[in-house]
Length: 263
Image (tube, rainbow, N blue to C red):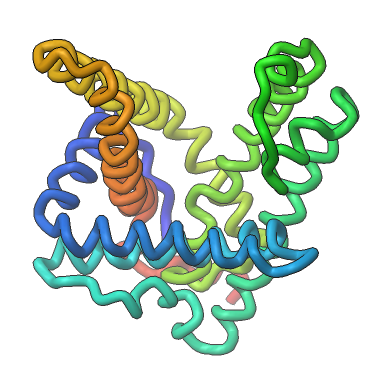
């Protein structure tokens, strides 16, 4: 395995590949994405540990969507069972993925704990447990500060885990090493990932503008609200489809075996 450094314009290629691959298998990719969301939602219903369990399952579930994308690129129809690919790769890699999930849950809960120091836990409670969102709550300076703190801390956490599930599953890298390699890959390809993020933001804004324009032409203000939700879900599904390509282009197998310098 070796790290590839790609030009910034590759970020646009990743977005294009995510969209075209989704369009090639829209039923499969959208269905798997909704199953992915349902799985995490059901996990949150488990008493006491629901939120932590859903967080722990996220790396494995994301790997399932990446495996589905790989199948789609081969012209195959990914079946629902592919979502549990992480747990069908042997005992060793299954345990490694479970450790990775536990690390992700611990990291996310830790950053929420830090945000709780800012506003007394209001933002963390709303995010993890749910509750009523009121204008008074959202306008509180402490709540907004806690939200920004959580977002700032989530960026390095997401970089650590971006490639980690795929490294564990496809390359057999240990959980801790996968976090290191993932962060380095994202750092070295910062330009491409920046373009990638901005491009997806542009896709979302463009979709919102189109929906608003159609609603205006039809003189139906409520159409924009009603239609934007499914449109947003499809865009998020396309986004998850594109994640595989960020991994594929950031790492590759070594062309030649690495010589043993100690022999």
